[in-house]
Length: 316
Image 1 (spheres, rainbow, N blue to C red):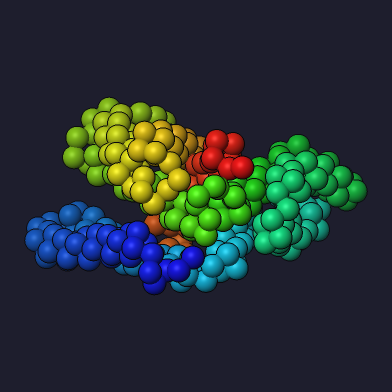
Image 2: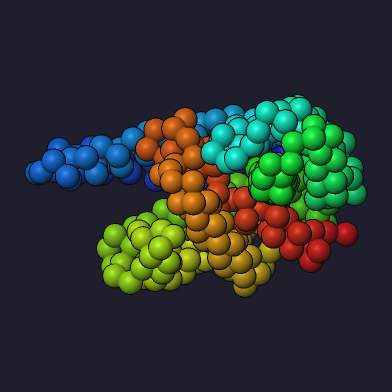
C-alpha cells in the first residue's frame, strides 16, 4: 500500500491526530478548572489516559507503516504481554511451568508465523485443536492433579483469548478481497477505531446520562444509557467510514454494530474475571489504562467475529 498517496489514510490519521490534540487541550483546561480534590484526581487520570493514547497511537502507526511484518511483530508482542498478565492472575502450579513455556515460546511465535506465510488452515486450528489437546497432555505427565481441571482450563482459556482471538486482528491483512488489493491495513485500522471509540463513547455517555447499571455486580460503572449511546454513536462512525472499507454504507454500519456489541461482551467478560480475582486491572503497563489486556479486552472478542464475517462474505 502506498501510504504517502493514499488519501483515505491521510484523512484517517489527520482525524485521529486532530482528536488527540483537541482531547489534550480540553484535558489541560479542565484540569486547571478542577476545584476540589476528587475532580483533580479524575482529571489527572483522564490526562494520563490521553497521554497514553498518544503513545499507543504512535506505536500502532509505526507498526502499520511497517507493513505486514510490523503488524505481526506488534500483535505477537501484544499477545505475549496479554498472556503474561492473564496467567499472573490465575491459578497455576510448578507442574505447569513447562506447559506455559511452550505456550509462550512455541504457540505464540507459530501462530503468527502461520499468518506470515498465509497458512490459514493451520492458523485456524492450531490453538483450538492442537494446543487444546497438548496442554492437558503435557501437564498430566507431571503427576500433579491438584486443581487439575481449573489449571488446565485457565491455560487453555488464556491461549484462546490472548493469542488466538488477538491474532485475528492482523489476520485481516491476509484476506484476498476483490477490488481491495493492497488496502487491508485500512480494515485493521477500521476495526480498532470503531471498537476503541465505542469504549470511549460508552464511557462518555455513561458519565453524561448514565443512571441504570447494566451489570451492577460485574462492572458497576457500565450503564444502559452508556451502552446504548456508545454503541449507537460508534455504529454511525463505522458507517461514515465505509469509503475506507470494502463494504457498502449499510454493510459498514452492520459490521460496526456487530463489533461494538462483541467488544462490549469482551469488556464485560474480562471485568468478571478481574472481579473474580479481586483486582482492578490486569496490569499497570499503560498509565491510566491498566494493563495490555485491559486495553484490548474489547478487541479480543470483536476481532475473530469481524475477521470471519469479512472472510465469509467479502473474499474470493
